[in-house]
Structure formats: structure tokens, C-alpha cells
Length: 170
Image 1: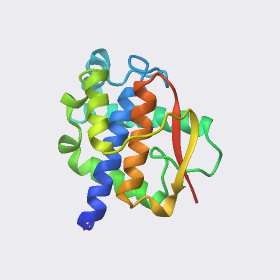
Image 2: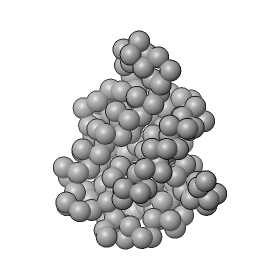
Image 3: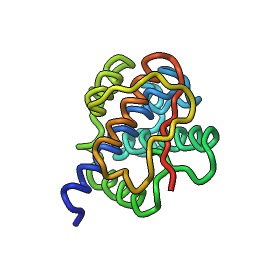
Image 4: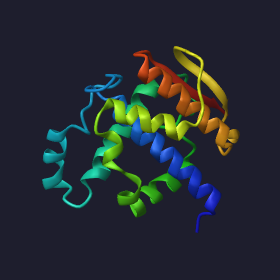
């Protein structure tokens, strides 16, 4: 069983991935060319993934975001869409077990609602930055303030039509 503190951390990372994954899509901020959260997408996914369509949407958006970040950051850096393997495994298990509780469609009705939810998740403000932004070391990820900083950077960039990619080093 995952300790409560670690469980809370995993939930926050998943929520950040969920919101940033939605906001980065073509219909919102156009950071990556996907439309997994479009109404037409769910109609396409439901016949194939009848019980897990929201999970398929999440994984599709996360993979698009991962590729975008990997293409724009140095090899070997970490970001919320690419974390050390043991964290990725814990995230995957939590998403599989708690998908209905983790994905709240009311948070991603539109860009404004998702940005509002992202500002509540991050609990911080960020200076305006553009491009890759080193925010710390991967060992510091468990610190709540680091996730706040990462969320605030995304919130600032996504709301100001710029691109900022917070990343961590080993």
C-alpha cells in the first residue's frame, strides 16, 4: 500500500497531467496537435474502450505532452510527463485503480475552467518565463512547493499564450 503522503503526491501529479494535457491540445493552446478531449474523440474512443474511454483520453494526451516536452528539453531531464520509472509505475497503478475519482470532466469543460482548476492545484504564482525552465532536482519532487511552482509556471504560460516547460535534473 502506498503511504498517504506519496498517494497525495501522485494525485497532484496526475491532476497536473490531466489539466496541462487538456490545455496543451490543439483546441486550447495548441502546444501539441492532438484532440483527445474533443467531444468527437470520446465518440470515437467509446466503441473501442467502452469502460475506459476517459483513461484512453488521458493516456493519449499524456503521451502527446511527453513527446512535446522530450523534443524541447535536454535528454536526461525530467518533467511531469516523464518521471523516473518507479514513479511512473506508481502513477500508472493509481490511474488504473482510481480513474473515475481522478478525472473530473467538469474541470476541463473549456480553457477557462481548466486554467482556473490549474491555478487552484498549483497554489503559487510564477514570474513570466518562456522556454525550458529548470525548477530543481528530481529528488526534490516530493516537496509540495516544487509541484506548486511547476503548476504555476504552466498556468502562467498557458494563460498568456506562451510556452514554458518546467523541468528537473538528476
